[in-house]
Length: 261
Image (cartoon, rainbow, N blue to C red; front, top):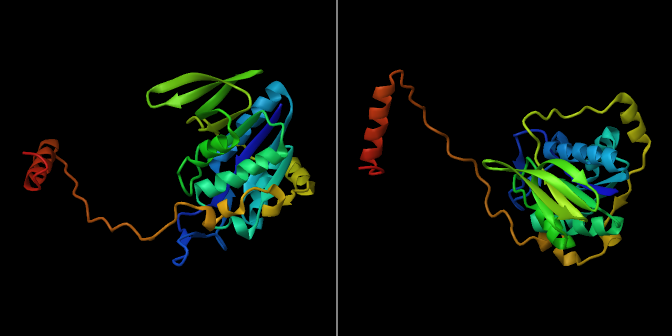
C-alpha cells in the first residue's frame, strides 16, 4: 500500500501580517507548526499502513523552513518526505497550490491513497484536497473521521451535519480528514526525532515536477487578495440579569430597526 500525505506548515499565531503590496501572508519571523488537521490525516494514514502494510510519503509545498514540519512527520512515523519549494510557487491560491501538489503526487507514482487534512487553519478554505483529486482524476471522500476497511476498495466513516455516513470508493482515492473531538495529537518520541533529523528531505523545484509553469504561484492564481483590513471594533455589550427584560429590550430594538414588526 503506497500512501501519500499532503501537509502544510502554518503560522502558530493569530498575529498574522499581510504584505500590503501583494496581499499575501508574510511568513518570515512567524513561529510555525504542522497544520493540526494534517497531523490527524498523517496519524490516520499511519493507522492504515499498520492495517495494510506499505509506506507513507509526505509532501509539503512551502519555503525552506517547512522542512521542520516534514521532520515532525518523519518523527511521527512517515517513511519519506519531500518539500516543494521554488520562488515560482510563491503567492499561490488554492488552485495554484493544488496543481503542483498533484504533479508531485504523480511523480511519486503508484499511489493508492492520498490523505489530506480537511483544511489549513490559516486559510480555512477546505479546497486544496478536492482540487488535487480533480487534477489527478481520482475519486474523493471528504470529512473522513476514520478509515474502516481497505483492500481493493476503501470504506470510510465520513462526518455529516447530523451524524455520519459510510462511503465506499475504489482505489486510488483521495481522503480529506477531520479529527473527532476525542483526538489528541501524538508527540514524537526522542528516538523518532533523532532518526528524523538523519533522514534526507529532497527539495523539488518547479523544473523537477514539470507541468505548465503559468499555473504556478501568483501568475496561476485566478483568485487574489484585493484588500486586507481589520474588522470593525465591536461596541460594548449589554448584560441582562432578567430574562424577560432582556427579551423585551431585544424585541424593541429589532422593531426600531424594522427587522420585525
